[in-house]
Amino acid sequence: IVYQHTQHPQSNFNINGFASVFPACGGVLTDSWGTLSSPNHPGPYPPDSHCVWLIRASPPLLLQIHVSSLALEGPSPCLFDWLERVCPGGPPDDFLPRFCGSVAPPTLNTNSSSVLVSFHSDGSIGGNGFTAQYHSILPGQKSCSREEFMCDSGRCLLPVSVCDGQPNCQDRSDEANCSQKHKECGGKITGEYGSLSSPNHPKPYPHQQLCTWQISVEDGQVIRLSFQNLKYCTAVSTTLMGFKETYCFKMFTFSNSDPAEFACGSGECLHQDWLCDGWSDCADAADEHHSSSCEPIQVEMCRGLSYNLTSFPNIWLSISDQREAASILHEYRVLMEFGCFESFRRLVCGVFVPHCSAQSGVLQPCQSVCSSAEQQCSQTLTLLSLTWPFSCRLLPASHDPTECSLP
Image (cartoon, rainbow, N blue to C red; front, top):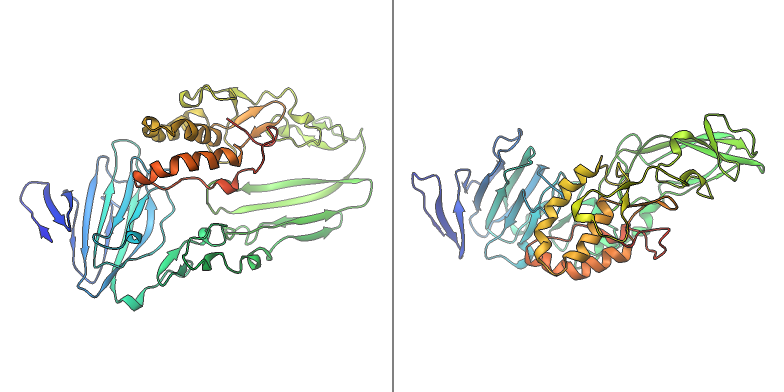
């Protein structure tokens, strides 16, 4: 290991052939434990920052790193601001891709006594940065935080990666006994009125839940559901506060709708706020006929697709308007020079600038669109040390254009 330092704000160091620039922030850390964080943390980090820390332990001690907070410009694949960790000279599994956004990565139990941690920010949007702790441990002392899952003798997984249908552990233990994780909610409900809510509401709901309620009323009655609050997310692995919902029955007639309500062809009554909201609440989709909620696509990257109308706010990703969507999609334009970009463009536009039609409402892209893009682009992203940013299994597994979009 060669480390040089002069009065100049930048100087070079080399570790096992890994050359980099040692900037004004960062440093060499040799204590048995310590903390590192972005400049100004917990305040916003400055633009155009580049920090590199070299953490060293005395063999046979290994290094464990835990990121306790993360708030960097996102989303994945982290093209502008990022946190990156490399274990020079260690096994390939010790190389971790870039991280950004607001979800901290799991604890890293390395197989190395030397670790490089780098932080980079561009000249635009920022955040409050990160803070991380490191410890020197013996090989037999590898551990994970309480909420994490450990497998493969030291690999830590976040809860969202357990029972997600994709084995992340070599021993596949993260996908074992998953049938027991979906038996904590749902059930049959009868009576004239009642309520149901997500597990732990109003606290955050747990990962990997599948709740099904069956509500039954007498013949000649229909059920009205009223959501008191609803926060959820698809295609992005996020845990929110869930929902609470109340229900009551209403007599099935064609003439008892309040003047302020809309009568479906089946006799159900809807509040006016439910009209043209992008969702077909009536069985015959009458509430979405002649809908005016669709708007022409203004995002340049998403023009020329199989559809030219969209709807905002984006109900899946909480994006308020097309300007905000365009700002997020701008981060992906760096991939334009690659041959897989067109397939990737159809997917990200389908997610961030969704298809809207008067007949079917707002549609997510079909799962096949995501799978095709992943097949064509994942290798390119790997070459750029980036991970695939979408979970295709969360999109509709259909080819019906009334159920999902084929951009």
